[in-house]
Each structure stands twice: as structure tokens, then as C-alpha cells.
Amino acid sequence: MLVGEAAGRALAELGVRQAFGVVGSGNFHVTNALVSGGARFVAARHEGGAVTMADAYARMSGEVAAVTLHQGCGLTNALTGITEAAKSRTPLLVLAAEATVPGSNFFVDQPGLASAVGASSVRVSSASTALDDVARAYALARDERRTVVVNLPLDVQGLLIDDGVSLRPVGPAAAPVPPPVPVPDVGELAALLAGAERPVLIAGRGARHARAELLALADACGALVATSAVAKGLFHGSPWSLDVSGGFASPLAASLISSADVIVGFGCVLNMWTMRHGRLIGPSARVAQVDLDPDAVGRNRPVDLGVVGDSAAVAAAVTTALGELTPSGPGYRGEEVRERIARELRWRDVPHDDWGGDGRVDPRSLTIALDDLLPAERVVAVDSGNFMGYPSMYLSVPDEFGFCFTQAFQSIGLGLATAIGAALARPDRLPVAALGDGGALMAAAELDTVRRLGLPMVVVVYNDDAYGAEVHHFGSSAPLETVTFPPTDIAAVGAGYGFDGVTVRSIGDLVAVREWLDGPRGRPLLIDAKVAAPQGSWWLEEAFRGH
Image 1 (tube, rainbow, N blue to C red):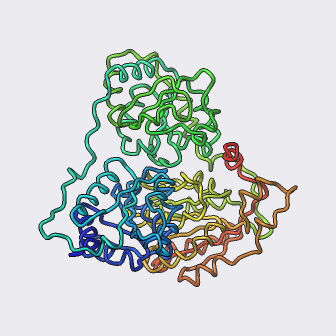
Image 2 (image 1 turned 135 degrees about the vertical axis):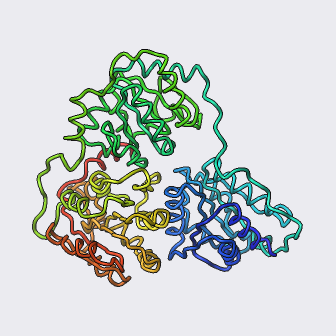
Image 3 (image 1 turned 60 degrees about the vertical axis):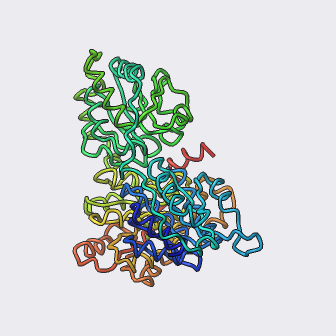
């Protein structure tokens, strides 16, 4: 067997069940070997889409996913998606063929590119080390939650591998049990929470596995709970949940978080997005941060207490320690707070003046209506742009596997591919892709992938015929011809790819969506929503404070 084939088979044996990619001559054999080893392969229309599909699949499945790429240009086409995955600590293997001869048209410094965007890099350097190399890459992705570029030099891929070489074991499928948290840290955090009158726990990406432990801790100290945007849905169903903290927080959530006297971030870096540039932290509030990565503690703001450890393990240990202390009171959980959360927390319960008319629909009213129409068991993927808060704030999700948010790099154009990867990881749910017109047209080639896979997807395009973030950021006093466009019939574009297309200019037009939902859903649905945008979204104004 050749090295390229052996590498693909070895990765399938190690546990890679899903791969994506665009196949060229350099990744042809490794891709076919993955498939013959038992992995499923999805051919995307662009490498950028392929890597984002793999990123979303890994996030929503908890598995290590893979993407396979041609040498050189295949890797450069995928760099934006690789950057997003690396910044998000997604366990992802990027199997990149590599031209190592400087005179080759395909030659680029592939390890250098990986390093430049924050990804790790492993090179399959010889036939004798090939299986060890791919096992090392897999373990790095799985156990340290890294995006790893696995460089497969063309000349090495073509070598024969020794029949006696066997795959190096990489340990159990689950990540190793984290070491126990130092007792002094547990005691100090427990004492901090025991003395709090208005504690709030905020969970981020690194705490998505710790729902039960965090809710038990919140019960023990009377805390309210919230999440960063990427962990939206984690505390769904709790009467003490404030949903998302930060730019997407509702007025009530923002008020309650900013009034907290103790805030503890679990697997959450407490950055400018989650804390609104620090304005959600009251002047006298004490702040603690729990993270597996020592370098993450205090990275974005000073903290009063840092605890290095797994979020679930720390939460459980602090709950036990609290049992030996006398809390100062019921915490934040008064009956008035409970009633206000039930009555006022959701964005849909916040009154708004409808912008609809003249052939345009208010995006808030549109999204509230869609929230009522679409099945509760859904997985929502949101692209970036001026529109992004409407689906993020107004569409409910059943749990942390109901919302996939590839926004660490803030690139538009990733939302559709995100929805595809999430849909394959969660086939039990209706996939919903929420896009702006700019991102939808940027990624339109992957509409073909949706159709080929037979996904019963709903694609909602918030179409304001512009790059709305720039329109509203620079304002009417600046020339806007470079960021505004003539009307585009995106429903017709979708129909050309095999979608059922619906144009929505008013809430009444959503009757066609109801009919699609009640039908066989044999073709995916694209909703071209002509949205009104008389002003910029306030969460984008908030975001631009950091630019």
C-alpha cells in the first residue's frame, strides 16, 4: 500500500467518520482511502466551504472531522475557514497534499501558512513514520482541541509502506480525565460565591459539556446563568437562564448581568463581545474565570480569581465545597427576578415599532414569525453581517447543539457551509441557515451541495441589497456605491440550484413556508426576505467599538 492510502485508512481506523473536501490529484488517494476505511465523504464546491462544513460538523458532533485538500491552491482557498476553526479550537484535521519542490507551481510554505493562522502542523515525513505521524496529528486534534494541518508531501505519498508497520495506538476515544483542581482554588471560589448576593455564571465554548454541573452549582449558590454566543442554548429550559450575555443580550439580561456582584466565567474568555467591552461588569463586581488553558485566564480583562481546570470538574468541586459553607442568602433568585425572566427576557417580548411596508418586511417581525413556524427541534447556523442578531436573538434553540456560530474570525460567507456541516452532525433536526444577501451570494455554489445531499434545509436570506454593516457604519454622509447593489432575485438563484424559492415582502408571504413545512420537504427551501433596514443594528455598533 502507498503512504497516501495508508494515511487515509489509518485516520478512519482512529475514528474519523466524516470528511469533506474538493478532490484534486494530490488528495485523490487519501480521500478514497478514508472512504474505503469507513468514513463518509462530502464533495463541496469550494475548499472554503469544505473546511467550514468540517468545522461545523466537529462542533455539533463532538468528533474529530477531516477536510482533504489539493496541494498549494487547495490549501490557500481554505485558509479563511481554517483560521475560523483554529481560533475556535475546533478538533479538525486538514489533510493537505504538499508540493515540496520550490520550482513547482503549487509550492507554498504550507507549515508557515498553518502557523500564520493559528493552526498546528504535522508533516508525514517518510514511509517508516507515516502512521505515527497521522496518529500524532489525530491525538493533537482530539485531546488538545486543535485544528491540525497534516501535510502530505507528494513524493512521500507515493512511497510503498512496509507491511509490518502498524498503527500506533492513541489511547481511549475520550480525552484524558483532567487533573484535580487545587483545593485552595476550589475553596476560594466557593467562598466568593457563598458571599455573593447576586452571582451570575457565564458559560462559553469550553463549558458546553458542563451543563449539569453548572446548573447544580448555580442551584447551590443561587446564581443566574448565561452563555456566550457560541454556547447559546446550553441552559435552555432553566427558569434562571438569561440566554446570551453580550451584544445579543436582551435589555433585561443586560440589566441583571451588569447588576451582579460576582461574575464567574466557565470556559469563557470574557472578551469584549461577551462583556460589551466590560460594560456588563458592574464597578464593584468581582470577577472569576475558570479555564483549562492557563494563558486564557485574565487574557481579556483582569480577574480577581483565576482557576485552571476543566469547567465540569471545577463546578462539581465548588458545589461540594459550598455544602460546607453558609451562603449569605438566596443569591439572585428572588420571586420577582423569576417572574421578570419569564415575562421579559425574550427579545420577542420587547416591543418594537414595525419597519415593514413598501415591499419590505421588518426583520424582527419576520424572525418572530419564523420562530413560531419552524419546528422546535432545529439547528440554526448564522452568517456574519448587519442582520446577524435577528436570527441569533429571535430564533430559539433546544440546546447547545441547536446553534452553530462560526464567528471567531468574523468572516461573512461561512453561514451556509456551517449549516451543511451542522445538518450532517444533527440529522434529527431541521437545519436552518440564516444569511445576509452578501454572504449568501458569496457562498452560493454550496447551494448545490445542499441539493445533492438532499438536506431538507431552510435557508433564510435577509436581503437588504447591501453590505449592511458598512452602509450603517459609515452612514449616509459617505459615498456608499461600493457597498450597495441593484436588487437580486435570490429566490430565483435558489430555484436554479434546485430549491423551492419563496420571496417574502410581508408576513403574509410566509404562508408558502407553512405549506413547505406541511409538505414532503423533498426539496430544500430558500426564503428571499426583502428586509427593511432603516438603521444599523445596535449590536454592530457595539462590535465596531473594538475595530
